[in-house]
Length: 190
Ligand code: HEC
Ligand code: HEC
Ligand code: HEC
Ligand code: HEC
Ligand code: HEC
Image (cartoon, rainbow, N blue to C red):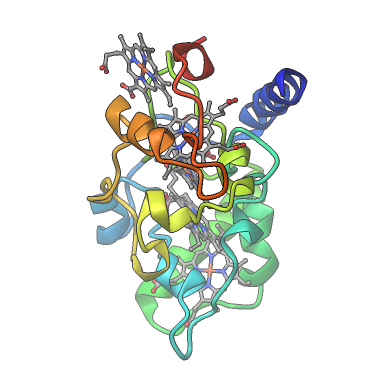
């Protein structure tokens, strides 16, 4: 247990180094992008939605490290470019947003996404432990596949509130009847 956790922690450190987050990134461009504070108005519903005509992509196609690392991971611009070299959009608004992808590729810059969900540095949240325990992304992040551009915290979000974490950890494990996860201070604060 301890060893796994250590390896997971180290993997997380490397994953963090590769993340493309830049605080306070540019918010010029189209109205929606500006309003959301994101550099590109990236709509989750058009990529991960399940309704007819939408693309129904698996969350982990883009959030590639959720089951093996502390961080879920944000896709590099090459993931976007893999489709958007061909998919240019139909409306002028879509085309304007999508053309920004090419600019980032040409300049060799990561897209400076603004981080939305974040807990304080004194607490640690390992995605892989939760994903491997069978929890769905939606239990914590809400119905992301139905959301347009993410800009605000989802109402179900409670990650900046210790009680939210501890309440779930205290729930009994269906098999053993014991609490399903530790509430020792040191598992989350170290
Ligand atoms: C095509 C790639 C792609 C797919 C598929 C995708 N996402 Fe994302 N996701 C992104 C990008 C890019 C961002 C950063 C921009 C933003 O916040 O919208 C992001 C951001 C997020 C964030 C906020 C991260 C933060 O800044 O705190 C959450 C939560 C999230 N995605 C969950 C999901 C879930 C759940 C699914 C599946 C239902 C999913 N995503 C599917 C690309 C994707
Ligand atoms: C698997 C293919 C695929 C990947 C990967 C992908 N997209 Fe898309 N994206 C699409 C499709 C299909 C559409 C719908 C475009 C249309 O209707 O013409 C779309 C639409 C969009 C739009 C326009 C939405 C609107 O309504 O204005 C933006 C912006 C966008 N994608 C950005 C991104 C970004 C940024 C990434 C990387 C994080 C990304 N996409 C990754 C396939 C993809
Ligand atoms: C048990 C609750 C929980 C589950 C389940 C969960 N997350 Fe998270 N997620 C969080 C918390 C808490 C944070 C903030 C972590 C931090 O600040 O260190 C977060 C942050 C993120 C981020 C932003 C930074 C990063 O790369 O980690 C993304 C993207 C994300 N989650 C996507 C997902 C996806 C996709 C899934 C499903 C595969 C998922 N999450 C499952 C609670 C959860
Ligand atoms: C399951 C994970 C978890 C456990 C167990 C846990 N904490 Fe926390 N704690 C958190 C998170 C998450 C926050 C909020 C971080 C933030 O502000 O984003 C927090 C916040 C705090 C704060 C800051 C004040 C506050 O309430 O926001 C203190 C002090 C604290 N914890 C002490 C403790 C002590 C003492 C224990 C053991 C009795 C403990 N924690 C157990 C996750 C945990
Ligand atoms: C919806 C339920 C749920 C929520 C919310 C949740 N967790 Fe967990 N967490 C779990 C489960 C279940 C496990 C046990 C996984 C396992 O057995 O490996 C776990 C395991 C963990 C572990 C590993 C514990 C160990 O013994 O090594 C840490 C650390 C952790 N969670 C931190 C957090 C923090 C911090 C938050 C809040 C930001 C949080 N969790 C919110 C369900 C949850």
